[in-house]
Length: 448
Image (cartoon, rainbow, N blue to C red):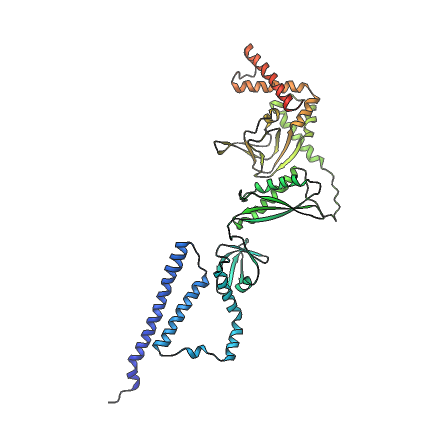
């Protein structure tokens, strides 16, 4: 009986195809198992390590290549050794065509083996900065502070110097340059710059900020502020806060940022603004009981000697525990009063335009009993003990009046009387004694 050869070979061909399908299906299952139990459960969930995408893809490719080798070699009896030995011209053409891709792949593997960076790290590559969000076969993707994506070939990163802000430690230092006038003593300038950096939100308290005198430039003395941060996403906000604090701090101390030496700057002080502030301060003082004893002429002589200061939002106008030798008249703005008790800070009050701050410290030198933080841009007039002392020297009768008012406040605090006048001779004697005591304290503190 004649049986065609095709019919005899059909069962064998079917078994070969079935074997090939089993091998391919098995490789697919192996890939799924490796993805789930190795990359996800072991590395990501167990050790918190995000395996680069191109390494997982490389593992999948190797598994599929092994499956293809088994199918060709043992199922279809087709050797692949001949495929591995290509003609020389074809090898050169393929090598030239794929040199960029192969270079990027090899560079990506080298970077990951060396643990130069990982997901979530912030890099500075040439003039570009961004957070690593993906490492694939060909390139590394960065997300900038503007939420834009930069894709840099791995070979380009590997052959140049780049900065990793998050290694070897998460906190890292940033430097901000500033140039100040030559007339400002370096020690004073450093104190102002340190205060500005330490009070900026986002700057780490430890290690503490530092200020270096970097150079004597053409326009002024060049300083450099060094501070630490741990999240590069906040770089713009922190730099803005430091520079804002610097402007207000320099303004309060009468220090200006110099213009280039090629520029001729002629300035005349604007007295109108200062006179407006002093006029508002005069009205505020007139409403305070401690200063009602001053005449208009005496107030007009007192206020021009005070300093007009500007505080930015978040700055401390008064610090609890510091020695007090001045008072502040809040002409414009709002501020919060925060008191610290038993290691806990609590907001106890808020002050607005028209309020006076620290007048008892001015008269007695007592330490500040609370911290006052500007809630908006504030304009204040500061009157220190030298200014008040000069006015008392010119008007000796004010010393007795202020002492009398302080004695009355002391009695009111003790609950001796509520109407403002003593009700019996013993209380009158106590008021006289308190007034004499305050006269001596005022003379000693104000050096009269």
